[in-house]
Amino acid sequence: MIVAERKPFEEIKDLLKGYKKVLNVGCGTCVAVCLTGGEKEVEVLNAELDMARKLDENPIELGAITIERQCDREYLEALDDKVDDYDALLSMACGAGIQFLAERFPSKPVLPAVDTTFLGVNQDVGWYEERCRSCSSCVLGWTGGICPVTMCAKGVYNGPCGGTDNGSCEIHQDQPCAWFKIYERLAVQDRLDLIIAYEPITAWKNQKPRTLIQPGYKKPEGTE
Amino acid sequence: MRLDYPSNIKIIRVPCTGKVDVMHLLGSIQKGADGVYTVGCLEGACHYNEGNIRARERVEHVRILLEEIGLESDRVRMYNLTSGEATLFVEYAKEMTANIQALGPNPLKKWTKA
Image (cartoon, rainbow over all chains, first blue to last red; front, side, top):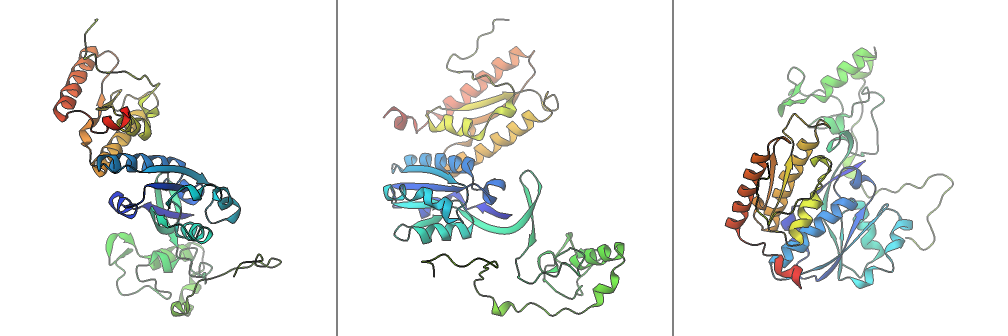
Protein backbone atom coordinates (compact mmCIF):
# COMPACT_ATOMS: atom_id res chain seq x y z
CA MET A 1 0.00 0.00 0.00
CA ILE A 2 0.93 3.66 -0.28
CA VAL A 3 2.19 5.03 3.01
CA ALA A 4 1.97 8.71 3.84
CA GLU A 5 2.81 10.85 6.82
CA ARG A 6 0.86 13.85 7.99
CA LYS A 7 2.55 17.16 7.33
CA PRO A 8 3.67 19.19 10.33
CA PHE A 9 0.68 21.07 11.74
CA GLU A 10 2.30 24.48 11.25
CA GLU A 11 2.76 23.75 7.53
CA ILE A 12 -0.90 22.76 7.10
CA LYS A 13 -2.02 25.81 9.05
CA ASP A 14 0.16 28.01 6.86
CA LEU A 15 -1.29 26.45 3.68
CA LEU A 16 -4.80 27.33 4.88
CA LYS A 17 -3.88 30.90 5.75
CA GLY A 18 -6.33 33.21 4.04
CA TYR A 19 -9.08 30.62 3.57
CA LYS A 20 -12.25 30.85 5.65
CA LYS A 21 -14.17 27.78 4.51
CA VAL A 22 -12.32 24.57 3.70
CA LEU A 23 -13.43 21.04 2.94
CA ASN A 24 -11.08 18.41 4.36
CA VAL A 25 -11.23 15.35 2.10
CA GLY A 26 -10.01 12.06 3.53
CA CYS A 27 -9.23 8.91 1.58
CA GLY A 28 -10.55 5.57 2.79
CA THR A 29 -7.96 3.26 1.24
CA CYS A 30 -4.13 3.24 1.68
CA VAL A 31 -3.76 6.35 3.84
CA ALA A 32 -6.62 5.17 6.05
CA VAL A 33 -4.86 1.84 6.60
CA CYS A 34 -1.61 3.58 7.60
CA LEU A 35 -3.58 5.80 10.01
CA THR A 36 -2.70 9.05 8.25
CA GLY A 37 -5.60 10.27 6.13
CA GLY A 38 -8.77 8.32 6.86
CA GLU A 39 -12.03 9.45 8.46
CA LYS A 40 -10.56 9.50 11.97
CA GLU A 41 -7.52 11.54 10.97
CA VAL A 42 -9.74 14.04 9.14
CA GLU A 43 -11.72 14.51 12.35
CA VAL A 44 -8.59 15.02 14.47
CA LEU A 45 -6.99 17.47 12.03
CA ASN A 46 -10.21 19.47 11.75
CA ALA A 47 -10.44 19.70 15.54
CA GLU A 48 -6.84 20.91 15.70
CA LEU A 49 -7.34 23.48 12.94
CA ASP A 50 -10.59 24.69 14.44
CA MET A 51 -8.96 25.29 17.82
CA ALA A 52 -5.76 26.83 16.43
CA ARG A 53 -7.66 29.30 14.25
CA LYS A 54 -9.94 30.30 17.11
CA LEU A 55 -6.89 30.94 19.27
CA ASP A 56 -5.62 33.20 16.47
CA GLU A 57 -8.99 35.04 16.50
CA ASN A 58 -9.41 33.98 12.88
CA PRO A 59 -11.96 31.14 12.87
CA ILE A 60 -12.27 28.77 9.96
CA GLU A 61 -15.28 26.74 8.87
CA LEU A 62 -14.26 23.16 8.13
CA GLY A 63 -16.19 20.48 6.33
CA ALA A 64 -15.24 16.80 6.49
CA ILE A 65 -15.80 13.99 4.03
CA THR A 66 -13.93 10.76 3.47
CA ILE A 67 -14.42 9.02 0.16
CA GLU A 68 -13.41 5.46 -0.64
CA ARG A 69 -10.52 6.49 -2.92
CA GLN A 70 -9.38 9.85 -4.29
CA CYS A 71 -7.55 8.15 -7.16
CA ASP A 72 -10.85 6.95 -8.67
CA ARG A 73 -13.32 9.11 -10.62
CA GLU A 74 -16.34 7.15 -9.48
CA TYR A 75 -15.67 8.12 -5.85
CA LEU A 76 -14.65 11.74 -6.58
CA GLU A 77 -18.09 12.22 -8.11
CA ALA A 78 -19.54 12.33 -4.57
CA LEU A 79 -17.82 15.71 -4.11
CA ASP A 80 -19.28 17.39 -7.21
CA ASP A 81 -22.19 19.04 -5.42
CA LYS A 82 -20.16 19.97 -2.33
CA VAL A 83 -17.00 21.80 -3.41
CA ASP A 84 -18.75 24.97 -4.58
CA ASP A 85 -19.56 25.75 -0.95
CA TYR A 86 -15.86 25.97 -0.04
CA ASP A 87 -12.93 28.34 -0.72
CA ALA A 88 -10.41 25.50 -0.90
CA LEU A 89 -10.02 21.75 -0.52
CA LEU A 90 -7.58 20.09 1.87
CA SER A 91 -6.69 16.55 0.85
CA MET A 92 -5.39 13.84 3.16
CA ALA A 93 -4.85 11.38 0.28
CA CYS A 94 -1.52 10.35 -1.26
CA GLY A 95 0.04 12.51 -3.97
CA ALA A 96 -1.87 10.64 -6.67
CA GLY A 97 -5.20 11.25 -4.97
CA ILE A 98 -4.44 14.91 -4.32
CA GLN A 99 -3.59 15.46 -7.99
CA PHE A 100 -6.69 13.64 -9.21
CA LEU A 101 -8.82 15.75 -6.87
CA ALA A 102 -7.17 18.93 -8.16
CA GLU A 103 -7.71 17.73 -11.74
CA ARG A 104 -11.44 17.24 -11.14
CA PHE A 105 -11.92 20.68 -9.55
CA PRO A 106 -9.41 22.90 -11.39
CA SER A 107 -10.99 26.15 -10.18
CA LYS A 108 -10.45 25.27 -6.50
CA PRO A 109 -7.12 25.41 -4.67
CA VAL A 110 -6.37 21.83 -3.55
CA LEU A 111 -3.88 21.68 -0.68
CA PRO A 112 -1.98 18.65 0.65
CA ALA A 113 -2.20 17.69 4.31
CA VAL A 114 0.15 14.71 4.02
CA ASP A 115 3.57 13.85 2.59
CA THR A 116 3.44 10.67 0.51
CA THR A 117 6.32 8.60 1.79
CA PHE A 118 6.65 5.14 0.24
CA LEU A 119 5.14 1.90 -1.01
CA GLY A 120 5.28 -0.36 1.96
CA VAL A 121 4.10 -3.22 4.11
CA ASN A 122 2.22 -3.35 7.38
CA GLN A 123 4.57 -4.85 9.99
CA ASP A 124 2.12 -4.19 12.83
CA VAL A 125 -0.58 -1.66 13.69
CA GLY A 126 1.04 1.73 13.15
CA TRP A 127 4.35 0.25 11.89
CA TYR A 128 5.09 0.38 8.16
CA GLU A 129 8.22 -0.31 6.15
CA GLU A 130 9.19 0.52 2.60
CA ARG A 131 9.57 -2.36 0.16
CA CYS A 132 9.15 -1.00 -3.38
CA ARG A 133 10.23 2.06 -5.40
CA SER A 134 7.96 1.19 -8.36
CA CYS A 135 10.94 1.28 -10.73
CA SER A 136 9.00 -0.45 -13.54
CA SER A 137 11.55 -3.24 -14.02
CA CYS A 138 11.21 -5.77 -11.24
CA VAL A 139 14.30 -7.85 -10.44
CA LEU A 140 12.85 -9.79 -7.52
CA GLY A 141 12.96 -13.00 -9.58
CA TRP A 142 16.75 -13.18 -9.40
CA THR A 143 17.31 -11.45 -6.03
CA GLY A 144 15.44 -13.96 -3.90
CA GLY A 145 12.43 -11.66 -3.45
CA ILE A 146 14.48 -8.84 -1.87
CA CYS A 147 14.54 -5.55 -3.78
CA PRO A 148 18.05 -4.10 -4.12
CA VAL A 149 16.65 -0.81 -5.46
CA THR A 150 14.67 -0.22 -2.26
CA MET A 151 16.58 -2.10 0.41
CA CYS A 152 20.13 -1.13 -0.62
CA ALA A 153 21.09 2.43 0.34
CA LYS A 154 22.78 2.87 -3.03
CA GLY A 155 20.16 0.90 -4.96
CA VAL A 156 22.89 -1.11 -6.65
CA TYR A 157 21.75 -3.81 -9.07
CA ASN A 158 24.91 -5.87 -8.94
CA GLY A 159 26.06 -5.74 -5.35
CA PRO A 160 27.24 -5.75 -2.76
CA CYS A 161 29.32 -2.59 -2.77
CA GLY A 162 32.51 -2.17 -0.71
CA GLY A 163 30.51 -0.83 2.19
CA THR A 164 28.96 -4.13 3.24
CA ASP A 165 30.03 -4.87 6.82
CA ASN A 166 29.28 -8.32 8.28
CA GLY A 167 25.68 -8.18 7.18
CA SER A 168 25.17 -4.48 7.85
CA CYS A 169 25.23 -1.51 5.55
CA GLU A 170 27.94 1.10 5.90
CA ILE A 171 25.33 3.80 6.56
CA HIS A 172 24.29 2.22 9.88
CA GLN A 173 24.86 -0.96 11.86
CA ASP A 174 21.08 -1.40 12.20
CA GLN A 175 20.56 -1.20 8.44
CA PRO A 176 21.00 -4.67 6.93
CA CYS A 177 23.01 -4.95 3.73
CA ALA A 178 20.42 -5.80 1.08
CA TRP A 179 22.93 -7.80 -0.92
CA PHE A 180 23.96 -9.84 2.13
CA LYS A 181 20.26 -10.63 2.65
CA ILE A 182 19.91 -11.54 -1.00
CA TYR A 183 22.93 -13.87 -0.70
CA GLU A 184 21.46 -15.55 2.39
CA ARG A 185 18.05 -15.99 0.75
CA LEU A 186 19.47 -17.40 -2.50
CA ALA A 187 21.75 -19.75 -0.53
CA VAL A 188 18.72 -21.16 1.35
CA GLN A 189 16.99 -21.72 -1.97
CA ASP A 190 20.11 -23.20 -3.59
CA ARG A 191 19.97 -20.55 -6.30
CA LEU A 192 23.31 -18.80 -5.65
CA ASP A 193 24.20 -19.00 -9.32
CA LEU A 194 21.78 -16.09 -9.85
CA ILE A 195 23.87 -13.69 -7.81
CA ILE A 196 26.70 -13.64 -10.32
CA ALA A 197 24.43 -12.95 -13.28
CA TYR A 198 24.99 -9.38 -14.46
CA GLU A 199 21.86 -7.25 -14.73
CA PRO A 200 21.83 -3.92 -16.55
CA ILE A 201 20.75 -1.00 -14.41
CA THR A 202 17.43 0.80 -14.87
CA ALA A 203 17.52 3.78 -17.20
CA TRP A 204 16.27 6.20 -14.55
CA LYS A 205 16.99 9.19 -16.81
CA ASN A 206 14.28 7.98 -19.14
CA GLN A 207 11.61 8.10 -16.45
CA LYS A 208 8.46 9.96 -17.35
CA PRO A 209 4.89 9.81 -16.00
CA ARG A 210 3.81 6.24 -16.70
CA THR A 211 0.49 5.02 -18.02
CA LEU A 212 -0.90 1.51 -18.03
CA ILE A 213 -3.88 0.48 -20.08
CA GLN A 214 -4.72 -3.17 -19.64
CA PRO A 215 -5.48 -5.30 -22.71
CA GLY A 216 -9.13 -4.97 -23.66
CA TYR A 217 -9.48 -1.49 -22.18
CA LYS A 218 -9.07 1.99 -23.61
CA LYS A 219 -8.91 5.52 -22.27
CA PRO A 220 -12.34 6.88 -21.38
CA GLU A 221 -13.65 9.39 -23.89
CA GLY A 222 -12.94 12.99 -23.08
CA THR A 223 -9.64 12.33 -21.30
CA GLU A 224 -6.29 13.37 -22.71
CA MET B 1 -15.40 6.12 52.65
CA ARG B 2 -17.54 9.07 51.48
CA LEU B 3 -14.51 11.20 50.64
CA ASP B 4 -14.96 14.62 49.05
CA TYR B 5 -13.29 15.56 45.79
CA PRO B 6 -13.54 18.88 43.90
CA SER B 7 -17.12 19.38 42.70
CA ASN B 8 -16.06 20.90 39.36
CA ILE B 9 -14.93 17.47 38.11
CA LYS B 10 -17.40 15.65 35.91
CA ILE B 11 -16.83 11.91 35.72
CA ILE B 12 -17.41 10.08 32.43
CA ARG B 13 -17.37 6.34 32.97
CA VAL B 14 -15.86 4.02 30.38
CA PRO B 15 -15.54 0.23 30.57
CA CYS B 16 -11.73 0.50 30.26
CA THR B 17 -9.38 3.44 29.57
CA GLY B 18 -8.56 1.55 26.34
CA LYS B 19 -11.93 2.89 25.17
CA VAL B 20 -10.77 6.51 25.56
CA ASP B 21 -10.16 7.95 22.14
CA VAL B 22 -8.01 10.88 20.99
CA MET B 23 -11.19 12.69 19.95
CA HIS B 24 -12.77 12.23 23.40
CA LEU B 25 -9.86 14.17 24.91
CA LEU B 26 -9.32 16.66 22.09
CA GLY B 27 -13.08 17.20 21.64
CA SER B 28 -13.47 18.04 25.35
CA ILE B 29 -10.91 20.82 25.08
CA GLN B 30 -12.43 21.94 21.75
CA LYS B 31 -15.82 22.24 23.46
CA GLY B 32 -14.38 24.42 26.21
CA ALA B 33 -13.37 22.07 29.05
CA ASP B 34 -10.50 23.57 31.03
CA GLY B 35 -8.83 20.20 31.34
CA VAL B 36 -9.44 16.50 31.02
CA TYR B 37 -7.68 13.60 32.68
CA THR B 38 -7.89 9.88 32.27
CA VAL B 39 -7.78 7.64 35.33
CA GLY B 40 -6.86 4.08 34.52
CA CYS B 41 -5.81 0.95 36.35
CA LEU B 42 -2.17 0.48 37.29
CA GLU B 43 0.07 -0.39 34.39
CA GLY B 44 0.50 -4.13 34.21
CA ALA B 45 -2.88 -4.72 35.88
CA CYS B 46 -5.19 -4.15 32.90
CA HIS B 47 -7.94 -6.77 32.57
CA TYR B 48 -7.57 -6.36 28.80
CA ASN B 49 -3.76 -6.47 29.07
CA GLU B 50 -2.90 -3.13 27.51
CA GLY B 51 -5.98 -0.88 27.61
CA ASN B 52 -4.34 1.55 30.02
CA ILE B 53 -1.06 1.50 28.06
CA ARG B 54 -2.94 2.49 24.90
CA ALA B 55 -4.75 5.19 26.88
CA ARG B 56 -1.43 6.58 28.08
CA GLU B 57 -0.12 6.66 24.51
CA ARG B 58 -3.25 8.49 23.35
CA VAL B 59 -2.96 10.99 26.20
CA GLU B 60 0.68 11.60 25.22
CA HIS B 61 -0.42 12.07 21.60
CA VAL B 62 -3.11 14.59 22.58
CA ARG B 63 -0.60 16.50 24.71
CA ILE B 64 1.59 16.87 21.60
CA LEU B 65 -1.44 17.98 19.54
CA LEU B 66 -2.31 20.63 22.14
CA GLU B 67 1.24 22.03 22.00
CA GLU B 68 0.96 22.18 18.19
CA ILE B 69 -2.27 24.13 18.48
CA GLY B 70 -0.84 26.55 21.00
CA LEU B 71 -2.53 25.28 24.18
CA GLU B 72 -0.85 23.98 27.34
CA SER B 73 -0.26 20.21 27.14
CA ASP B 74 -0.86 19.92 30.88
CA ARG B 75 -4.57 20.45 30.33
CA VAL B 76 -4.59 16.71 29.55
CA ARG B 77 -3.08 14.15 31.91
CA MET B 78 -3.11 10.44 32.70
CA TYR B 79 -3.31 8.98 36.22
CA ASN B 80 -3.24 5.38 37.37
CA LEU B 81 -4.62 3.76 40.51
CA THR B 82 -6.41 0.64 41.68
CA SER B 83 -10.15 0.49 42.36
CA GLY B 84 -9.41 0.31 46.11
CA GLU B 85 -7.48 3.57 46.27
CA ALA B 86 -10.23 6.09 46.92
CA THR B 87 -7.88 8.38 48.83
CA LEU B 88 -5.52 8.45 45.87
CA PHE B 89 -8.45 9.21 43.55
CA VAL B 90 -9.24 12.26 45.69
CA GLU B 91 -5.57 13.26 45.78
CA TYR B 92 -5.33 13.12 41.97
CA ALA B 93 -8.60 15.04 41.59
CA LYS B 94 -7.25 17.81 43.82
CA GLU B 95 -3.88 17.77 42.03
CA MET B 96 -5.51 18.08 38.60
CA THR B 97 -7.80 20.85 39.82
CA ALA B 98 -4.84 22.79 41.22
CA ASN B 99 -2.98 22.25 37.95
CA ILE B 100 -5.90 23.61 35.91
CA GLN B 101 -6.42 26.54 38.27
CA ALA B 102 -2.77 27.47 37.77
CA LEU B 103 -3.20 27.30 33.98
CA GLY B 104 -6.38 29.37 34.04
CA PRO B 105 -9.56 28.93 31.98
CA ASN B 106 -9.55 27.38 28.52
CA PRO B 107 -9.18 30.31 26.06
CA LEU B 108 -11.52 28.48 23.64
CA LYS B 109 -14.41 28.75 26.09
CA LYS B 110 -15.64 32.06 24.68
CA TRP B 111 -16.15 30.43 21.27
CA THR B 112 -18.32 27.67 22.67
CA LYS B 113 -20.70 30.13 24.34
CA ALA B 114 -21.43 31.92 21.06
